[in-house]
Image 1 (tube, helix red, strand yellow):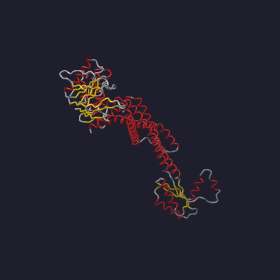
Image 2 (cartoon, rainbow over the protein chains, first blue to last red):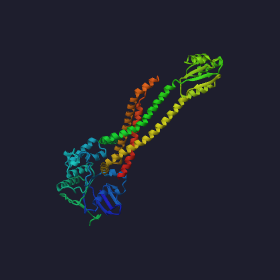
Image 3 (spheres, rainbow over the protein chains, first blue to last red):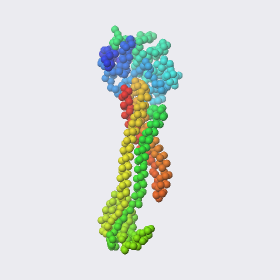
Image 4 (cartoon, one colour):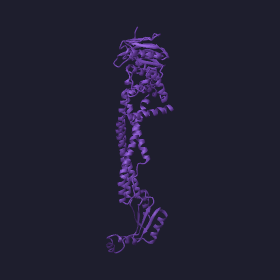
Length: 217
Length: 299
């Protein structure tokens, strides 16, 4: 459940990336945030994941107002979010499995249980046979799926993805979107910022279209 | 509690892995820390040995009581009774004739003694108190001086006092040295941990994004600093032990030339534990300062 009202983000220097934005996203929704480049998609995603703080307005994610979130509460908010970045942010000094284990180490899961869950997540994205591989040895599509495995291994209630298919060929992009809709089927809220929304069979995903930081009419 | 323990163990493993990942850097900083700790610790061990040496030398400390020339039997017996009643330790009476005979027996003195018109030596007592602490000797001297018929009490405590003052000075020097090297150790850890943090910048950023607390991020670096300090302390212990080993034979030879059985005391397990503990605490402190600053810079 995400409630956003009067949300504004002004960067130092006066540039307003998001202007007086209001919308709601119900739990279990699948939403595409679209718009031209520079419309504020990435900024909105950064606000939703508390990487950036709002300048004005309120933004409530999982019952917490991010505009007034204490720094110490931030990690616990993030544990309920699965973040997927355009550049994946994988760690190349360890295996695929170890990348997926990191979120579980952070919450202090017993090693055996953590391994079990990490392998289940790798299996889900079809990378179980590559668990020992270094991410650098994976293709672009595989890297993005690995990033998804890391994002979902904590069983978050909300998945946030920023241009997850920007650098992928159509087949790989298809696989990634299929994964997102599979997670959405099990009531995970999925929010994807992209300039090229793909249709999901049997369901019409909701679009939030931005234009210069405002909702497009 | 179990989760807490598991997270600390995981942080320790992570710290070991990071130290192991850059073996040359780790070895070099261990060496620097070890050498920095060797100097004050070796000074301490040396002082300890000197103190032991001083104590064994003080064991033969003597007090001489000289009677007035011509002091009668009763006065001598009075002193005797006083010593009997009050002084723990050995003492004996040296009559003036015995003293003169001893002097005569000394090489080259016989003629001089023969030329004397009369015996110039007084009756004397020589006392070897069981307790040879400087304060006790001083008290005994004051006590003996007040006895009737005693003209002079001689006490060879001046060198003990000097030795004591020297030891105090040495202790102070070692303490100052230790303080300086403690600052050095903190600086060394500060720098190595800063480099570690910068090398792990990517992992730290990713960990933050997926819900790591500050404590989770900092903990491995604290362990890393503490481990370095502790291992540096052990290295210092090793250096000192090897050094003492090398000195043992020459010292024994020198001691035997002086007719002493003095041997060098090694590093006690307690001191080694202390060295390791101090190293770990200072390493932890350096890491704490370093991580706080490096993380602030990264934000």
